[in-house]
Image (cartoon, rainbow, N blue to C red; front, top):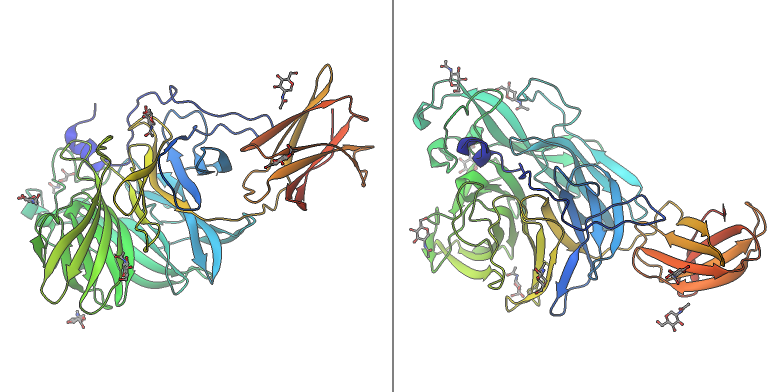
Length: 494
Ligand SMILES: *[C@@H]1O[C@H](CO)[C@@H](O)[C@H](O)[C@H]1NC(C)=O
Ligand SMILES: *[C@@H]1O[C@H](CO)[C@@H](O)[C@H](O)[C@H]1NC(C)=O
Ligand SMILES: *[C@@H]1O[C@H](CO)[C@@H](O)[C@H](O)[C@H]1NC(C)=O
Ligand SMILES: *[C@@H]1O[C@H](CO)[C@@H](O)[C@H](O)[C@H]1NC(C)=O
Ligand SMILES: *[C@@H]1O[C@H](CO)[C@@H](O)[C@H](O)[C@H]1NC(C)=O
Ligand SMILES: *[C@@H]1O[C@H](CO)[C@@H](O)[C@H](O)[C@H]1NC(C)=O
Ligand SMILES: *[C@@H]1O[C@H](CO)[C@@H](O)[C@H](O)[C@H]1NC(C)=O
Ligand SMILES: *[C@@H]1O[C@H](CO)[C@@H](O)[C@H](O)[C@H]1NC(C)=O
């Protein structure tokens, strides 16, 4: 067990609990081994698929971007890599997939790039950030984008976070005059050119964000270059009418910025900050702050209220919605989502996605606890799903997204000989819209106009058909939506 100050700052560390007990799926037509998504559906869910980026030290495979349907069927598995923020967003009016991929550091942040794919999964943009960043081992990186945010703004630009090491006077916290700490940065980046359009650093605003307000204590051997002090822990940037709202987890606060980067106001989960709390408006160690319905008089702020750390178990994690009244300087709790039959203490990571502003459905991903839950407008759970052992497998965020894709690759086909003929295994990773397969017998490996010998409805990720006495030893399959062909496999001999 690591000392408390180390685990407290290391919010991305997962326990070495064996994840092997969790069931994983295997297929014949693809070499995938994703964790099974166990789904309890108890009500009507919003449309869309579930997007996850599970990772865990001892996971056999399936540490990748994953899409599942509500029955728990795999729809898409991306390349084996550590991902975050895997979801659908709009870029120039088109649905695109976005995700961060890179290395996650034990210090609680990462270095990587943001990948943007079109609806055939072709990578259309790779967004990177370069600059004079300092790292714990002084190594340089290809890109310094941190994992915590990958948000496409209404202006079709990308908001990302970054962590930079710097030496600073921490005598106010009981340290010395030149300790190493992490500064929390964010950047707005032009997606096509990687040009930085806006940058902001928390340490540049030390007068408005005093280090002494941090709930992350300086202690033990923290303060060296290898283990810098993480005073702020930036983890979400929301767009606002005037620019941005920045979430700093270790301050239990969100900061609304003027366009020049100066802080206009602070909402604190501890004491309201610039607002008087009405009812329960508390939150702590939060993630995923988002702004809705902003006017000059006020706004709605949604967030994932972890309320726990790896070393401090306080209260069940909740999904929080707050009304901020800018005129009367009040903050009022509107919603607090939790599953009384399954209270979760999420010590790190997590997300709160408002799915529908009319019916109030919300999808919460519990971060270090490998569960997602969808709540309805009355706060009842309509779906609860799990993809690993608690604290052994995590997904930094999780989303429900509507998505329609026709992959640029062909359907996959494996045919094995049986005593009666052959068994045909077919799948099409990432294809959302096909609902049935047709199996053809081909004369040769490159023949056209092949003869239909069987058909089957789609059954989840992989569909299997037994063929009796096939006319030749060559098989081809095609994926159809109704009577429309969407994709055709190679011809395979067996
Ligand atoms: C990171 O911090 C170092 C040391 O204080 C500083 O020289 C450098 O400019 C910073 N990098 C960025 C991108 O701000
Ligand atoms: C300040 O504290 C850090 C962390 O404990 C240590 O690595 C560094 O050597 C100290 N510097 C001085 C000047 O004492
Ligand atoms: C930033 O803008 C705000 C609002 O216009 C203003 O009050 C403040 O003085 C500005 N700060 C700086 C450093 O220019
Ligand atoms: C909010 O938190 C503060 C300090 O953390 C505590 O004193 C207060 O009782 C809490 N309020 C509610 C309504 O839980
Ligand atoms: C924004 O306001 C509309 C209209 O009053 C309401 O339907 C919607 O639920 C509000 N959104 C949020 C997040 O509160
Ligand atoms: C689903 O329900 C079963 C039976 O009540 C329960 O054991 C399991 O933990 C539930 N799973 C989730 C993810 O809620
Ligand atoms: C596919 O399912 C439909 C009903 O949804 C059924 O009518 C049809 O016979 C099925 N096709 C095959 C090949 O099983
Ligand atoms: C195919 O045949 C095997 C036995 O040879 C059987 O176990 C399997 O269930 C059959 N599969 C389908 C999809 O009919």
